[in-house]
Length: 138
Image (tube, rainbow, N blue to C red; front, side, top):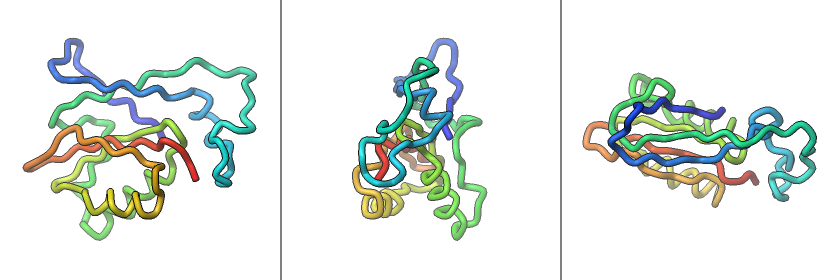
């Protein structure tokens, strides 16, 4: 699941660009969970060029963000972890929460060390936006 937030025509905030391979979107990770290079075994025939995903640093919620604030607290981690699990290397999404999701970061670092990059786009006090990117699998 690759999220492509919309950005204003003339943004006044910093923009982070992330490369996402079109072949990863279509095929998913080719390593099969064995820990090898995530591009191993992937055919280069018919590959498309990389798409650019622009993520804007700002406190407003974008329509493509995963906003868990309306969910009951007991369902938030389940929804976030399912979204993280669906990511293939290079894919990302923006998480929106009403508090710093630092405990989630600790959980991801413990369960999937070095696999998920974490970058704050907005840090409270009422709204947190975090860019989560799968850097590699396994």
